[in-house]
Image (cartoon, rainbow, N blue to C red):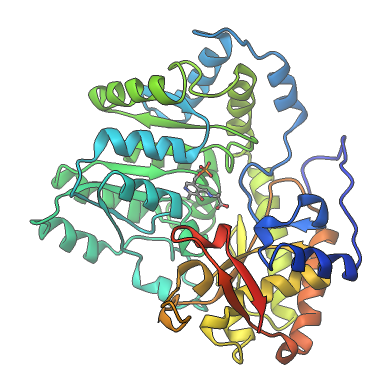
Length: 453
Ligand code: F0G
């Protein structure tokens, strides 16, 4: 059961099918353009969408808004250095600011960054620094149905090869994303992290954690990795941070705050370069674009997020939804993770070809029938077409992500999601595809316009 009870509630919008049809037409079938008050259950992202605790709210009330050297900063610094062990900590307003500042300070143009899988903003910031972002997911990740427990791992053989044969484009960093959001939200084992750290050390390449979901990764390690069953998630998280040379963190996920992030580093010179850029572009080094109250709420969230009862319930509620979705006859990327479930839309809608976007078609159905907002992760997000709309590149899988905000929705909300999916799965052939009518050249999924085929 939930290890908390509800003290403050927020009504959710209830809409009619006709209102949803009109809304979807108005936004040219782009779910990002819906007003949030047209959405009943919002599973677009688990980022910045969590519910804060009474203790976080209280910590925020005690925030010190001094321009420099606030009490909030020192409290935050003590908490984050105990958790991570990094001597140099810089607050930033969110994860992508950490990426931009670290990569601009660490990378030289023409070099390569390797990762188990770069998240899309991480990739964009590597590329903006003039570098190549290369993903090396482990082979087990290719089989969406397999129950392999650590499908978020990096391919160690591929990594060794890439480090040894990097003549043209030197490897400037290895980024380990825990959990692996771009790779179905799957966890990375401590063994994989340790071996990656050893390879990086041998080749004098820094290993950086993209730690947005470090606590959820630690939870799955305590459940599934031998040698870790008796450890607490907090102990696993502490060990993971210490294996790396530094981290970039979006605290909007496992900091359970609405805004915030940080950079943690061991290297003092790199930290100094980052600090200069931070001051020029985010804010002074003791606030980094955040209010004092944000720092205090983040510090409290970072403590709450590794509590075993919290993580056990988070896994349990995700498992509850996963069971009902499987029973409804819809396949998900297995095994079910904690922050999101990824629906296999390609398999549910085989009659919709990749370039009529089965993932998007399913996401639109979820909205039309149930007022549920989700995100396509398929050929709309990753594909490419020529000027006539003929396919050039398709995504490897046609998925829909149901992201699960922290402490926000209850089992009955998720039962509504599963029931809506069950209704769609009864007659999948009635679901039609979409065609693009307007798009932008980069990150097209945010602003794309479509029409039903
Ligand atoms: N790294 C990972 C693994 C992420 O999932 C995200 C954001 C970021 C970095 C960037 O952090 O949003 O604070 O700037 N993921 C969100 C999502 C947007 O919905 O998965 P940010």
